[in-house]
Length: 107
Image 1 (cartoon, one colour):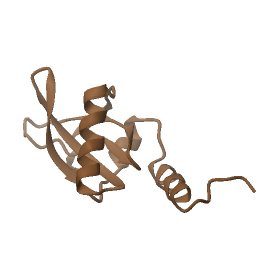
Image 2: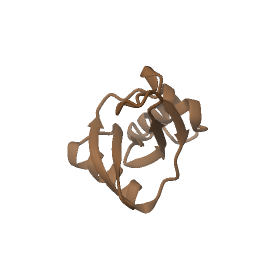
Image 3: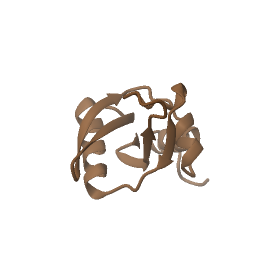
Image 4: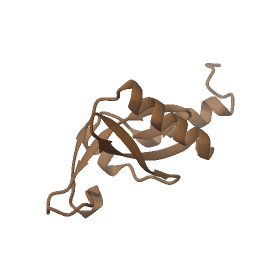
């Protein structure tokens, strides 16, 4: 998941292609958009909140019908996310910064 300003803006699943455990997009893993459920959203936003992260990549692992937190990234890459989700991550971060600085109002 990609969390910006306390909200999940996109979610993807990574799939290893070579039988390896690691499925990083930068290492040739496949990615596809994944549905954001209430559980996923809560785990991701709470993890970012606990670590004090305004921008975060939260990695989850499947645990039966549920999930476990794998890691929280304070400087996540977003090339894979943008390749499978209809989102412009830099634009979302920029919009969040404008809101935080009180620059979101039309003048």
